Length: 381
Image (cartoon, rainbow, N blue to C red; front, side, top):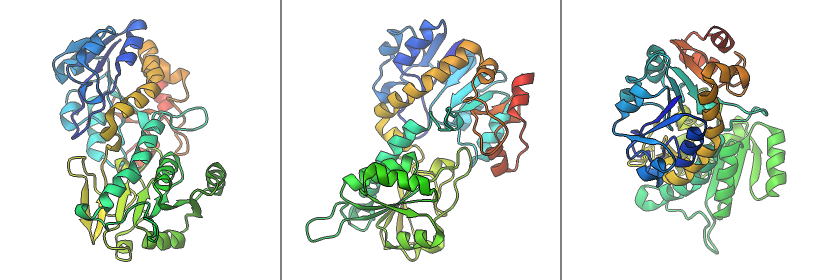
């Protein structure tokens, strides 16, 4: 198979879909790897690093899309890239389709087979290709929130750890999953007073046991959420419904009761955001203000630490990329339930679009589109 990796073109996106080490593995499996010139520079990889591992460097994204049987990326294909996709081609990348009807329609129209990193599951129902970026984003969130809180950036002028005689920042993390756990760890390590909200009591017990009371755990009722948001200097949104649009947990009305200059950091923005007033921003222009509250809603947060993120993502995606290349998408999905599961909103799968059909239930539900059973797709091809 010809595996192609273009340069990412989303604003301020420095990651790359294939590392030199992953290219070496694919070449060892008998595949041809095409890398767009300069694709790895933002993550610290030169063209020569890829060539040394057997990859071939090409000049343009068009050459990649024209030649590749499978295109491996990081971020969802932008409009110009979607026009270059073709019937029968595999696209393997983050897609985040639920809040993006335009992209969904373009991918359906392309006829390509599109497998989304964020909905591939593991044997325990986890999200192995989302987890490393969730870890990165979770650890970044308090760092970015602390920057947003600085007065020069429009914030309250509050130091995360305070100083003797002055209270530390009050940080509220909504969601106790991978993102929320890492965010709470870092915020607590910065000296902030941290509360984590979640609806799962077993998860709250687990967090309490793991971190020995390092931060507070609170059941996420409406009343508790409103109370803690009102008291917060920083709120980190870390809520995930895999593949589906994020619920809007912090409403615009709630902003009126918040402290002026407080910071909202929406890590769920790729799935539409969990604050009603969220809209996607970029690293170039990351913060905006609504009703006196500062919003940090960068849609590709891990891109800020591109080398760490690329290496972490590459470690996770490599086995799946090789399975797709070695077997083809149809056999790989048939053999691996982690790439394909049942048509049920409680079960996850990686196959989102194939040959003009949407195959992921949560996306269809979010966008009001018909969904075809992925098992039927695999059986019929």
